[in-house]
Structures are given as C-alpha cells and as structure tokens.
Length: 228
Image (cartoon, rainbow, N blue to C red; front, top):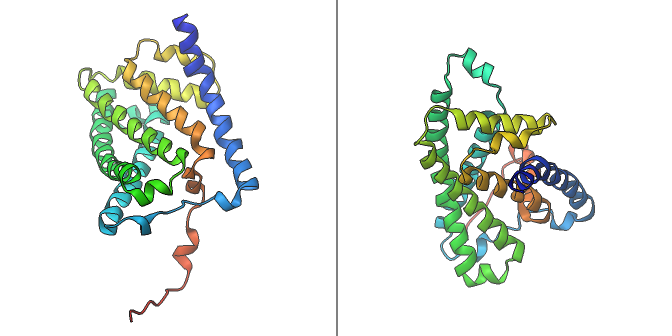
C-alpha cells in the first residue's frame, strides 16, 4: 500500500500538477484577463518601508531559490563531475546557497504573512486563496530549511543524487521515477509534495503575474513626479 501511495504522489501527481499548471495558466490568461495581476496592497500597509524591504527580500530570495533548484536538480551528474565537482561538494554548495537564499526569502514571506493575517485593511481585502498560497509558500520554505539540517547528517551526496534522478526522470517522462524517493527521509518528500501543490494552485492565485515579466519598464521614458 505504501508503495502505491508513493508511486501516485511522486510518479503520477507531478504530471497532474504540471498539466493544471500549464493549461490552467493558459485558460486563466484567456478567460480572466482582469484578474491577471499581482493585486498589490502596498497602499494598505501603514509602514511602507518595512513592506518594501520584505517584498524585495521575498522576490529576490524566491527567484534565486527557484533557479537554484532548477540547476541543481536538472543538471546531469556527468556535467558537474566533469568540472571536478564531487557529489559532496555539490551538496555543500546547495546547502550554503539554499540556506542563505532561504533565510532571505523566509524573512520576506514572514513579514508578508504577518501583514496578511494581522493588518486589518489587508486582511479585509484578501481572498481565501491569497492567504492559502502565502501560508503554503511559508511552509515550503520552512521544510526546505529543515532539509538543510537533515542534509548535514549525511554529506555523501547520495540523497541529493536520488532527488536529482527523480526530477530528471519526471521531466524526461521516464518510468520508475518514484522509486528514487523510496528511502528518502520524509521531510524531503513533504518539501516536494508542497512544491507540487503550489504548482497545482498556481493558476488559481495571484502568482500568475509571474508569467508577465515587466520588460516594458526597461525601455519606457522616465516619469517626472513633482511634490507640491
């Protein structure tokens, strides 16, 4: 029974989450243009300076974590081994970078979560999905930081290689991906599951604004603002 659950969660559900993520985003863009925005509530925050620092920390941290996971999980082992990087060295680099970026992002998301829950004006203008997604990201970050502590107990790189093999089998549509996670500690599995839930919830949340990169800001003319 445990093997079937493991097979469904880590062998089938990734494709369910990916399908909802892609086609749900396309459908939202096609049918819900008015809701395709970040829906900023900055003006509702009494101390805007604290909000700006936290918002920047969150966005910078989560982008670095995303691309770090992308490179770390999807880079074949022969590439970094050819560069003279051992599995242990790669694991240590991932732990240090992930720890720094994770703490930066956690600082930002913790303030944003507090603001979402306890600033009355923000809470009154928040949808249930807004609160759910920010709590989900917070939990995802916490479990990710816990995995660093667990990783310190085994620096041979074996678990990191298992996680990478799982991710590479998933994205290349190879069978048996779930088998790589059978002996992996539960905190890694929880971290992966929360990530897949986030991809599933993505099209139904304000996270869709990630697709809309602000390229126009780089080439637009300066705006002159005068104080009276």
